[in-house]
Length: 112
Image (cartoon, rainbow, N blue to C red; front, side, top):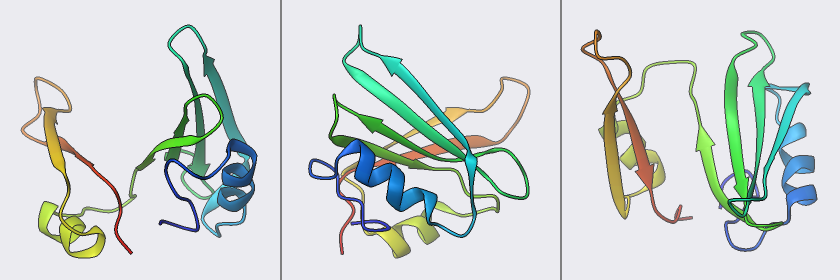
């Protein structure tokens, strides 16, 4: 469970209400995109200060399926595992072919 959100359990409206209460979220930045042809709805928010995406949730169709967090600071793979627990798996990809940096996506159930 993360911020009171539980994948496979939390509804879309309850999840939105909870995320809007987080102190770093710009409530007016909510962006809801229906991908009904693909069977999901994407809801994202931005940081108050930076106005860049920081929190994203995927709902299938109205139940929370996935949570994506975009920190506004550097975090290592080890730090993420230490905080969230061992992932069921991970995926790495280049941000851009011209950059040496990579994004890292951890997936699995959040423990705790």
